[in-house]
Length: 369
Image (cartoon, rainbow, N blue to C red; front, side, top):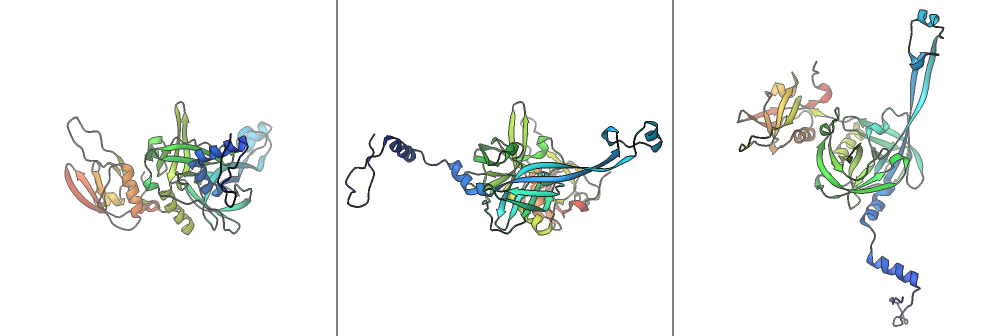
């Protein structure tokens, strides 16, 4: 096969002949440009890191007694057991992923990856390994920030805008599943604003990006990228089982806000008003029901109860912005913050009622018995 190529200079008019193998390669390159996935990973991949954690767990017990069970001294002698053994320590190791989002050496990951870790080692794709220090972690949103011990500049991944995501957009998961470094999987955004309560998970405050891009153990804390190679989510969990293979990621806009608080003060603020919510029941045939969130419970003495909110009120707007779901209510309260009055519009028996509620920090909310 002959291929003519352009040549600069006096030989420009003479056809250039390439060997068949080179000609085939040149033709293929002209027909198949680089995959957008490869371009996206080249943009953010150098900032995706492996996290190796270590923690020491101490236990005490009676020497010779399984499970470290403690017995009365008389029973110890009766059964011929030794005195309580000295505290024993064992080392537990874990692994996860993370992404460098600031060149000074700030790494974003999941809180469950570094929880109770005594030591964190960070591995980069270029082979470098450096110690890391946990600046702060927030179990409610499952986010943590680590600072690299050595000075930069470090490679960074650009952060995108998760509010612009649409169902059907490309989703690229990057991380280290099962300890296999630099692994890339491709899928789409399957759904948005998937509340963790829908997954049977309590004790978290998250609306997640759902994706069919493969996310496996070890991917936790790694980035979910869009087609441009921007980080739009932090991979956090996978729903496995027969017929299931769904992954979930924390939207980067939420993660960015929490990370800023963790860097500044080592903890995150969580505004609360003291309500339990549910979705508006489906209307009877022919009836219309406005979207909103139904108040199912109130914390006695909490901001919502003190402001006059009642059980069965339907919250339809916060700060003048309509809300259609319980998740939207929680998000709006989160974004509003602590200590500032928040205007709330509710429907009470078909009548519109306006209230003002001032959110408080979660730790200051009255405890229920």
